[in-house]
Figure 1 (cartoon, rainbow, N blue to C red):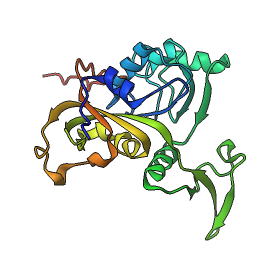
Figure 2 (cartoon, rainbow, N blue to C red):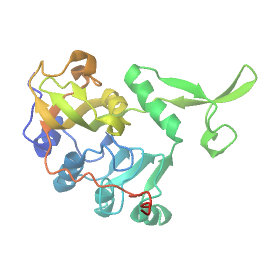
Figure 3 (cartoon, rainbow, N blue to C red):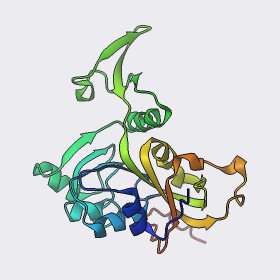
Length: 236
């Protein structure tokens, strides 16, 4: 199977992303987000989407671009404090939101990729997070059962990828990308550098190509920083 496509637009067309799809989007804040895929989804005008992502970007970047155009119906997220439009839509009842503790979100995604249907965690017990969920005691401590989190599609970003779909992430940009690549039924990977098969040392592969259905070399990455913090300069 030839997994290489020309760009994000071709990738989402060939993957068959459609209105109402459930999509996982890699990234943490604005680090390691699939910028090209998000732009292509916006351009395609897909609607009623459910996005599973640690956060919702900012007002004018990342998934915030899809919130601007009202293409997202539901967000499953952990941290959403950087997006005023997200807050406005949520408080106005225009956006459905499922808030998930960050570690629980990561494990629910990882469990889906590993074929684990559910697991128990102490996080959230005795809070609204546990409402309507099975609870159980283990060794004198109460736990909440959480279900694996699946998606129709996953869009991820890597630093280097080869034509077979093997991926290498760069430092913090690894974040949610590897587990989402394994959890999506169809995975699209955008990479900063696309190389021939054999160019990546097998010991350096973070996501094996078996999890990737389409791959392309992205372009024009902005890599914006949410909150830039600098240490005060020392006086001479």
